[in-house]
Amino acid sequence: MQETGVRNSAFGADKFGLKNLKQVNWNLGTAPLYEHSLRNNEAELSAGGALVAETGVFTGRSPKDKFTVRDALTDKTMWWGGNQSITPEQFDALYQDFLKHCEGMTLFAQDLYGGADPKFQIKTRVFTEMAWHSLFIRTLLRRPEAAELASFVPELTIIDLPSFRADPKRHGCKSENVVAIDFTRKIVLIAGSQYAGEMKKSVFTTLNYFLPAQGVMPMHCSANVGPNGDSAVFFGLSGTGKTTLSADPNRTLIGDDETGWGPDGIFNFEGGCYAKTIKLSREAEPAIYDASICFGAVLENVVLDPITREPDFDDGSKTENTRSAYPLEAIPNASRTGRAGHPKNLVMLAADAFGVMPPIAKLTPAQAMYHFLSGYTAKVAGTERGLGNEPVPEFSACFGSPFLPRDPAEYGKLLKELIAKHNVDCWVVNTGWTGGKYGVGSRMPIKGTRALLTAALNGSLRNAQFRTDKYFGFAVPTALEGVPSDILDPVNTWKDKAEFDKTARALVGMFQKNFEQFEKQVDADVRAAAPEVKLAAE
Image 1 (cartoon, rainbow, N blue to C red):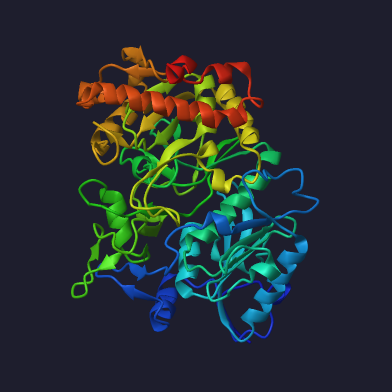
Image 2: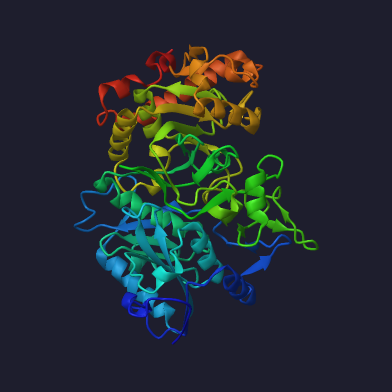
């Protein structure tokens, strides 16, 4: 077996059980991974220098194909209501078949960290059969110093084999595609999908499982920090604006997708960003645009002009879930440490497809807990398999139920304690529609959302006049300089006021029905924070 690159020779591929490999390329940097990708016809080169790859059939996550081993460790600690199980025997059969499949192959290996806080990070080794997947995960996780690689011993090992086809009968899965996690042995096996995002989400899932037991809150959120050390976190599912809104030129970016909140403050899980690029423009999002086209960025399913090789970010013909993976350092104001103090503000982003939620509202701690557990948003077309061309309203517990190994109430309790301990201001922000439902109204203007967020984060919004929303009960500002007053009260943007009322009442009913699953697990003040019961019944 040939081996290239810097590595721990005392802890090689054989420690994972890999044998009879043709070659292992260890910890290659950006340029050599480009060369391998292009030589293997895995990707194309864009005009600006970004690498452009297609992910085939899978252009997003496939949550129905994700499974966790149910054993002595996980039997009583996993949230089996939101996770699928396989037996240790089924996982072991898959594992052995993976090892057999790799014989004679050339693999790429990266030694990386999940988590910027040394006290809570997980050493992660990722084996991939595709060079661009190796570049992707190297970009999205945190990279050790070169001197650390010679002694690197992984705690978590991921092996990513798009060419492997799982056998549902033998492996306990549902299709040829599978993401299988064994928390006891800290192994993740990914098969049948070229969608690279499955790798990084597996690292997050692992951290989401182990960190709460250490008193650390793992959050599916982006985060940034102001010049005065005033950090903020932004919850939201894909397509709600986490990446866009946290990339504020006046604040330092901590990270755009997963953040931990521990005893010393917040810390990023990642070393890069994974931004949606559909309709991306330099005018609206200059920092993300420039980062997405430069050398070192990986574009997924983005259409290139066949002559100029310029990316067409408006073209969603392959998928609406076009993506850019770029290193944090490509954003000029990104934090080099990935760490900041305890947050002053907590923002929950919802892409309201019904167009009835205000652009911003202030929440009491109890309301914050209610909306965190509700996790209301709209899945945007293409983020997951099986979605059509229209957004689908969804309640995703803790704004990330696909990544929650533990019961949502466990994360909710931990977050509630942290909000109270650190006196955090909480907000809900609608980045969805105004002036009508999806298909009738228009998307909330980014500039308006940014202005409202800036006012919330710098403290000036606290001094505004507020009204109590009659449907949801939270406090909504009545005026803010630079923001049209009509937008602040959504009913004013609708031509048909009766239809607005009907739609708002229907959404209230959806909130109530969804929250029934949590009512026995939360305190009375959280139950009382629900939208008015009578409204849905009238």
